[in-house]
Length: 400
Image 1 (tube, rainbow, N blue to C red):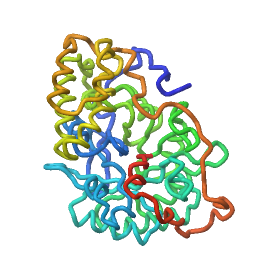
Image 2: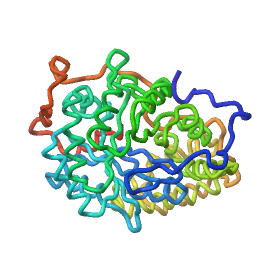
Image 3: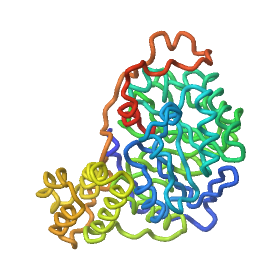
Image 4: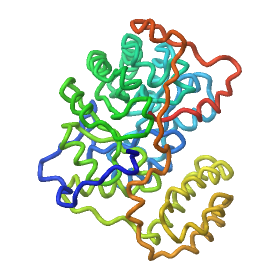
């Protein structure tokens, strides 16, 4: 069953938090409330979207994945994405690297620049990454994973380091319990588990039983990830698994107000209904202006096009404008198009559990030749071959 078809719970089971039912998420010296984290997603969680999600109530908002190689080589895209925005506290950055000698100086530099939380990506299932021995491939070699976590924790000092993983490569090769052991032994402050394998990508349903098993197996907080489409999904995941917090990914694409609903529910309040088009338009316009300010006019407007599709998905009045929205090139043009929509049109119920990106399919995970023959190795995999367009490589990566 695809994620977008995952059944919602009966209304009688959708209860806001009881007084004292949940606690803030402890991450080193940080106390995160509500215990709801915006997932790091490539091409998504740049500063403009993080700002919106924090304003709507996200307890923590993690940056797009920043690669150690791009950071080391001074890649402009990498350095821009690593920057925080005005007033962004706590500042949280996800790093990706497969060589401890790259990871340690990168983390040290980020901490010196004011980063207050470092997350490490060991869950990316993209073939371009796993066939180089990175992302979801790294936990296959627990000793290499340990070296990387140890390097980051040592360089971070008092700043908490967390790791984000998947269940494993596929149903025949599970890695998440070994990764949990490594996280504890090497001093990670918490571990996030996406309850799918790399082979699943974003198909099927997130495995809450695996999240519960990891909770039982480790002494550090576990964050559950996968299928948080509506506010009650977050509370139910914590109730069913005992996890200390939830990570929200695809469910908030074009829906930053999902964090407002989650925040209300964690405070014991009945969440507000999703916004009508009249409330969504100014949110979309503010997001687009932020993208233009952050990336420049051309790149910002290009990025805005996908957000137009995500914010308006399922609205009947937006269908006729879809082609024009996908060609929009200025903020004024965007505002004029959105003014043609009916502000009274309510949010479509069917769009609440519909994926706006990363559709359900599976894959055969690509690993380096002979990678599984020496799972005890702690040697870093080789970097991408010379001639790789580093900026394109950066953009191909995902948030795990």
